[in-house]
Image 1 (spheres, rainbow, N blue to C red):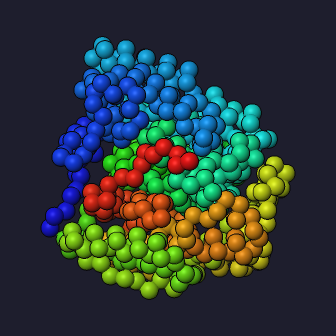
Image 2 (cartoon, helix red, strand yellow; image 1 turned 120 degrees about the vertical axis):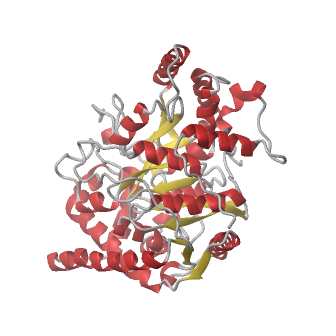
Length: 503
């Protein structure tokens, strides 16, 4: 079988492979004389290799990205703060250490973005609301600390909707982030700032999180890649939520993860973030593994929950299946009407937590737009009694067991992120019917959240001027299966970003 696999996790091996591929006939690459101004076009692993080969300095790398932020962010409003002074200071310090013989680390010198609900020591964790603008974090979140240990450099904080509770990135504190493909369409939410920053070349990697698709949906809308790790894979802590009062749905459904422009960068980021932190007792110590079966088999879901699917979205999933078949993987279509149950159960548990834990703070501090969407969301799902809530939690185990049985047969399942094209800005505020359509379109996506499963999203082609994406889900802690299958597809389709805003 003609199957491309990366078995080494070292940045050097990955970067060398990508640099060779970039220089194959038919491929274009900036010449060395252009590197100071065009460095933002490279992937993270390529940047690390350029630093390792002493073709560029870390300071050059950071300055190139700062120039890109200055050129692009006024158009798209993805970055809420630029950390120029601290970034340049870290870059110069790292260059001095390299000059003295220090080795380049896995993410040495790579700039990255940090969503506004992730702690960065000395800066505000705003959650996108005005009331939290002075909520200065005393310490880095676990994933930020891990990136810093790998000598990556924080460059920008990024926009998000109020309390991460919309499928569109528009903050009461910082305003809307615009989709670089089409400003009339949503960027997705809630990690839309990071997705746009990555898509437009401000940074190669963004750190976000995913409670109900918040990494994967923005990636679909903006033409980049993301991975939602398994529950327990990446340690979690936020100063904006009391230490001993993390709501059930947040602890069970929300995970921290990266957004990038290549699968190799996702793998590198995932390995960097997969480290223990004493602040999260639920972190699970398990290696990142997942070799494909001797005769790999993938299940294809074209219309999650049979709620309806846009033709271009369906076409993208079918294209991914055909690519894998050409590479020797057996592909079988799955009837997915059963996804209606986990979609509704996820929504019922989330709305229960919102009513009993979040609502007072939302109603007090969120913007009118955010409140309107949450009210429409709540109206779709009546309050659960304590017996209904407990029985719902018990039902999660039965659904998880059924999926585990499926993963004994399939290496992975592939389907849409959203079964609908990105909606027009503002249409998510059209009341209950619009909220219902959005939530149902995410049936496969929120199933991963309900069950704690890993999922990789990546674009496979463009249609009508927009990137069309898929997601690849596997058994819990089998992230490597998702990544390997994604690489097989990426090898054929390539990347569709970074881009300049198309207006």
